[in-house]
Length: 267
Image 1 (cartoon, one colour):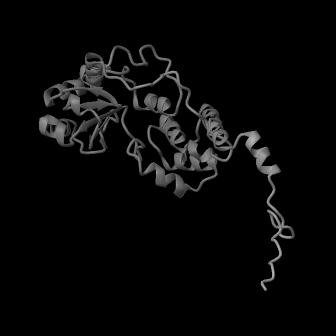
Image 2 (cartoon, rainbow, N blue to C red):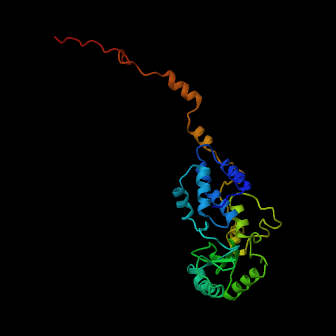
């Protein structure tokens, strides 16, 4: 069983401290990214580490780690190449791209090359239909990519290059990416996304500007209410509370209102 570094233990404490007392188990997702950042995948030792830090069972941690595909349960390569094979990307070339990469690398879905450099997977959707067909490398986008272009990207990775994504941040290894997903800043030069968003992403904004469409009465500086704000809004004003306290109900011994008049005798 691998022992984790002092830095990982310290970062685990920082992650847990982000959450309110009694809600520490919410730190599980970033903690899983943290152990993946050190080992390159979520190993049995990583599951145990997370369980011990949060007071959970290994079964509880394992249930989460196996639910999300971003947590790798086997050693993964430095470069995770994901090919979208959902409907839009698939018919536009994604299926052919996956087959070409699989044949060249000699691996199938969720498998890693023998040199430990590249892991290949097909993705059901990468949320980029307007740029189809798309491929991501460690979750950074390469848009409108056909099989020959994807093979060229892989060749560059094999040669030690870091191709520049179509948009977003610069490429980093899967371990470096996991550090960011755990909530820690990447200090590498160019690690933060640079340049504007792509045209299809901004199309809706451009149309809104062209036709003068805006959300009525929206102030972008409006603060987001906290739980304390919402509870305070539900509470009655102090004056109303005081009035309710002074208006006591009549007791059973003395009914409210005038006493009933005696009934007159009829002759």
